[in-house]
Length: 301
Ligand SMILES: [Zn+2]
Ligand SMILES: [Zn+2]
Image: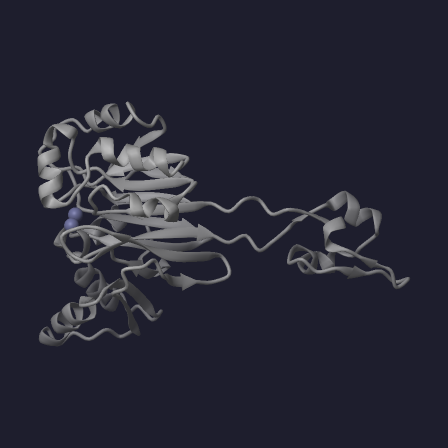
């Protein structure tokens, strides 16, 4: 799993910072998470091929999380995209995007599917052989979901020594990787457990933005490899965090600690702060393994 931060600041785009957007790469699939204004410029800047993005997950309908979507959808058409595009997001997102396409008489040349969300419980929104994606219901001024991406490792690791001892032909390796037993020429059945090791552990990534401090999410994100949790404010502005339904650095760190995550990635900083190192300092009084998101930063999970 590889995460590229395209933008990680709150509110308005500026010449030096971008609103929320991230690309998560899992086994050669690219998932776009949120699409603030300027996301397509950031994709170009970081040399991420547009054609590799087939699924976009939007947390909520505040502008700093989706105002780049109509631009990207429109650019896909100009680039003669043919692949289907799937957009996951709050109910209403389809209406907003379709109205813009309709009034500009610029329908897409590819299939555009909307998966609208309105559940207040965590639901599975996407699953294939390699990954499963759950929503993480958040508490914010409008209906908001974070997303939990869990890698699925269906392939077992080959025990080459054992396989060679039994003189098993290479053409059976695929079958063994997927858990199959092998019947030898003499009719003896060799259990898969004698031919393989357990798969390497699956990675997981939780994206949580925007939200107030909310312990309800802890069971959903327990033990994840990396948690991105918004930290719009420092504790000195905790009154603003409460008023605008955001979190402070200290609150993000408290959630990371209580959920026993391996690392905390912080972002969605208010542009009022000149020095984001202050977020790390505040968070590390609670939880040590903190990474500050920064536009363009790549993080291996
Ligand atoms: Zn926001
Ligand atoms: Zn918001």
